[in-house]
Image (cartoon, rainbow, N blue to C red; front, side):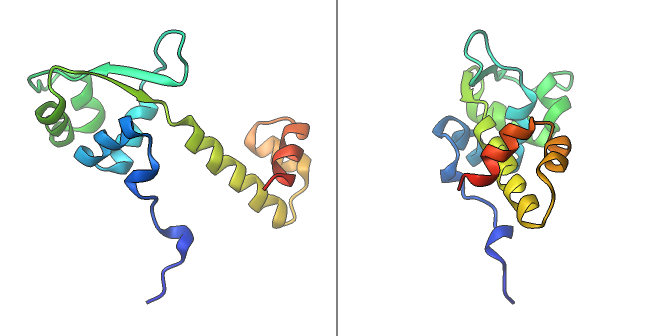
Length: 131
């Protein structure tokens, strides 16, 4: 069976170290989901921060967000710690930019792409020509 390279998930090592530690405990996709749901911390918009309780309680927001099993894993591994991690927005931008270039190669017009992704025509033009 042939597997296309594009369909393979990125390894945990491509994540920032702070997020990779979480991914080792609950998995890459769950870690990225968690990080994506936490608002930025203070003046540092590139960072998110959250407290992992020492005891997993059914009414805690981590349980509501991730489910009991993954919340318990985090509590077991990081209980009592405040985690400071990257917000991983660079990964979203990388994906968005790749999709813009793919749509352009597929023949879509710049203004159509701009409307689809919510960016200005000029910004889409810049991204489309950049490699």
